[in-house]
Length: 176
Image (cartoon, rainbow, N blue to C red):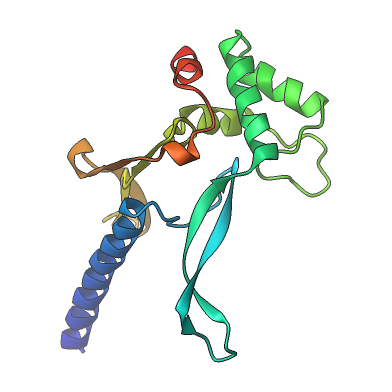
């Protein structure tokens, strides 16, 4: 039984490394590596050479493209903050105008929160730079739960993606 546990833990560790390497390859090829990002929509990339069991082209990956409606909201958030409004002020303004939020809550008219605004203002993707692999999951020896820990900057992957730029460099710098 102990042997199976050791083999299983080695398998899981190796699988994690392979998964990380595969996702890094997607990032380096300017493909979407998962998750929702406000301001963009995921567009599937079909492989015309391969077919599924129903004869349809298989999906080889996905690319993020700018969603014009959401991008307008992102630019507005940056502009409002650059003009001197606080996170809370931007939140109140968007909620009072009933602007669709990044994660609309069912039954809640006011879905924007200051934390959502902060995340948007610090996401470099909006300036056309993807920074990936900032954190890793490690097991807490005391609780046994997985927790996120920051990776050293040397392990980060940064990719310029000008096709995904929503805000100008000038506006980005004004906010930062």
